Length: 331
Image (cartoon, rainbow, N blue to C red):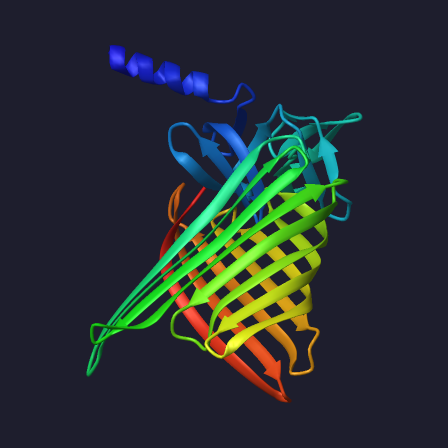
């Protein structure tokens, strides 16, 4: 009895004071934190069952004491300071005034995230293991990760990957990449990025690549639904190989896109960087990836990734495509 009392006390103290309440059409009531309404699914985080998805059509009414961004059919997005429970199929929106609206008219609810004020840390780590046994024995291991930390007007972004492959007990692939970017926001959308990237490969002609770049960026949006950043940079590239070292400048354009779907259960993401070297031999270099992550629970993900790398040089194009399926963690 004492242990149950202590556990309940801890949950109550740890749970936000502005806990939201959802009343279902059948009379059941759920309390927790509204994470997102999108695609006809309301994601509610509860202290007793974790993250649950509720069909929007099954909700009778709800209440929330925290600011939310609403989208209603035929209207622009609007912000609310509070939602108050009302009659079946209705809710009272409290903002500049008070208005009772039909739940069926609301297509999206997104909690407002204070811009450039709160500390935010999130990331993903995905791993793929491929063991192939036929005429040759091939073992391949690949791990990719990214994380970002925001505080005040600063944002730190760290990305990396490690790939190792053996064929018949002999190494056939051994490479790693690491990139660090530092962003300084001047407004809610505009920022300046300075970054450094290094790549090493023991089985390629170019064994080491280093890139130092800087340039402006624009954040279109960043909320519970997803984000979209666009960055342009001027870079200095150095390539080290057995036949010599090369230095040249490039222009680059990079994007970072993420969109949560199906009440946060599914996530689509895409990152890409287009480099235009200031030399005659190479027209452009494209590194891109597109992926889906399916949330198994609060921390585990099932990931599907498509990678496309392309180089156009001396009038010819060279492409490499990869499909990866693996497990990962997210926070």
